[in-house]
Length: 309
Ligand code: CP
Ligand code: NVA
Image (tube, protein in one colour):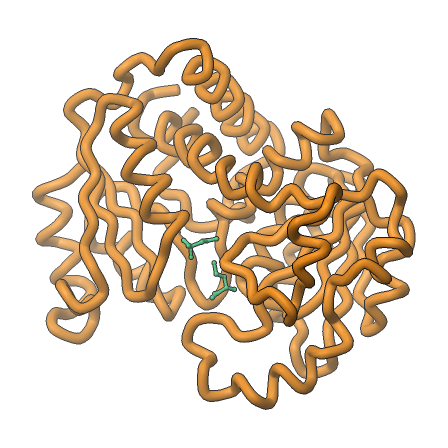
């Protein structure tokens, strides 16, 4: 498969996304059967972070190692992307050292600038706009549970944030039905919705935009939530915690959904806020398999970008 970058799920067709997911599944099975072939031997990946991370950092480092390659972490204060040094300069310097860059940034435009100047593949490890690696891991988790994405009812409860955008796009591309309930003023960007509508027209998925979380939970096979206060929004914390209070995923909401509903969260979660302990630790929760699927999904992306798969 020909891949230049991995910046957005929207950039790939349904067969291409399915191919990446198939490679992810294959690599996961191979790992469990004893270990992966070193298909990325000699390949290097720089991990550039402007924000904190547990899952993204660890899964990329381990993933590269398992495929025979090498990844190294560059902490937010270390290279000061866009602060200590211009983004396009960092891009051109790293572009001469490594085979690919994974970057977690505040502003999505900085990923586009890295892609413009680095001359090597750029992987989006989360921006203010989207989180496509999370979307791929979420897709893998849903497929493992329901056998496919097509026709599965996915309901996102909370903020129309970066994680919601990538989840909506993977659902719309693959024919899953996507519903979101979010407060007024916290909608996903209009252009992200417009794109999803175009994808849904092709895949046959239904998209529904609501304010009422109970309404969104009806018929849900996947209940998904994320933090009410994303990284970079700390100044709005008090206001957001007030506005989002009715959007908690708790047992009462789970009881409205389908009886085999699974509960997902990209993590880190804020127990007692967007999700209760009872739900996160309960029988419907898939948050930890979902977190572990970051490793497998991203190995699929890496294998297609750098390993000729
Ligand atoms: N879900 C996710 O991206 O986690 P981290 O912020 O810990 O990488
Ligand atoms: N929406 C969250 C996701 C963290 C993985 C954030 O951007 O902080």
